[in-house]
Image (cartoon, rainbow, N blue to C red):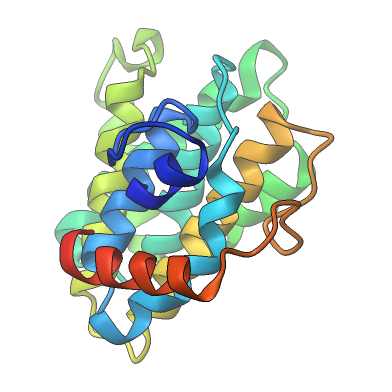
Length: 212
């Protein structure tokens, strides 16, 4: 995020105004939890977060859902319970008054719960016991909590390639944000900005490795 601020012409900061705050927060978390070896792989994603900002409330829901479903199957049992409740909360708010979800989101949720059926069962029972749960709000703080638990759950999981899962989470979240906030922009796989020169790339990698 510091280098994103540099490319955007802002003061050097890991909280640049050029990126949605929740997306920037996720990027910092992923960077901090990725191994030194895997961290350089995040570099090509940096131009993709520049200019991705806006106030659409769907962003927090989509990012939280992306994070929760990415982490549910590999997180510890304690984290799974919290994430399953978070996923159901995202589902409820995304469905809105119609009670219907886009097919891709419904499939993602179903796939995540199929890999952690006990967590789904626990979450549904817990929610059923909370009479006022249906009136709860979904705020940026709610989303950030789900995202933080998800990243931590992935980073601490006993899986072969947590770096890959963290990368996919961040890349997918970028795509989600772009689809809502910059629908005419190209995806992260084809950034419109030119690649930084060798000297700039060297400075970037040194900064990412040293500071996050």
